[in-house]
Amino acid sequence: MSNPLPVLLDVDTGGDDALALLLAMASPALDVRGITCVAGNCALAQAVRNTLTLLDAIDAPPVPVAAGMDRPILGSGLPAPALHGGDGMGDLGLPAPRRKSVDDHAVEFLRRTLSETAEPITLICLAPLSNIAMLLRMYPGIREKIERLYVMGGTYASPGNTTPAGEFNVCYDPEAAAIVLQSGLPVTLYPLDPFMQVRFTKEEAMRFSSTASAGARIAGGIALHYCRFFGYSFSLIGDAGTVATVIDPEGATVERSSMLVELSGGATRGATVFDRRIVTDGFEREGNWTDVDVVTNVDADRYRRLMAGALGAPEALTDQA
Ligand code: BDR
Ligand code: CA
Image (cartoon, rainbow, N blue to C red; front, top):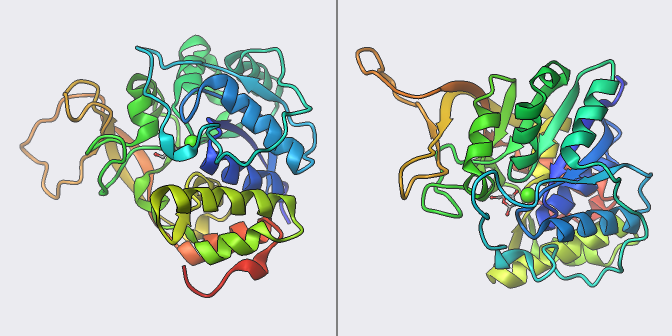
């Protein structure tokens, strides 16, 4: 077996960020070197608290957690979406965290961690890109220490979830998304299209909730919260699918495509625009179009099983979701 891949996660925990953290912390394929938090699903302080509480609950090793940007680069951001609950993580009633975050700002923590390692590190970004954009702007030389960015954000062919054309992480901080996605660094984008594909049924969530594994109980509780909120009989694994793509790339269909983030516009601000035209000869285009690798489709059952195995409860799954 090859050495675990060194990764840093950037999160706004966040019910589905919590699922992503559970998968990342449990996977022998990943070496989680740190977790940075940013405002998005909830206020920054709540995202930090949720992250620390989650790590306590699964008795995780002392991975550093750093608080970063409490707002987007421009403006004050979007209201916290009600779907994640009053605490941003499904209102599970978990106790206050025992562990503490590091003193460094997330941007400084990222700079230090990246500059101190010999080998480049993979960034897994599951939230508005404010921290990562600031890092690239303040310390452009750090680019050479970034192996690749896996980014949950945007849409490819699907509709938006925050505006008709826009996805939450990009809409929350469009300027940051433009800086990061159009940086020219190797990017694998995990947009809403695959995000919507991987799910657990309500029955599976109930079985997770009653297992001996702390991680599975939390994942089950979060999934049941989303089932209740939407009134659906299933719940998405959401951000955790991005982590699954890093761990098991064979489960993802990836296309290279040219894109940009729409920063002007009214209805379309924060949309990820892909140039999917068949014929482009003779048609000019304006803007800083950049090639990224887009996950257009995933093997949903494979990733469901990966997740359930990491939670220590593979028997909770039925054949279909
Ligand atoms: C993204 O926005 C947040 O609500 C989720 O955590 C995910 O990162 C989906 O649009
Ligand atoms: Ca998120």
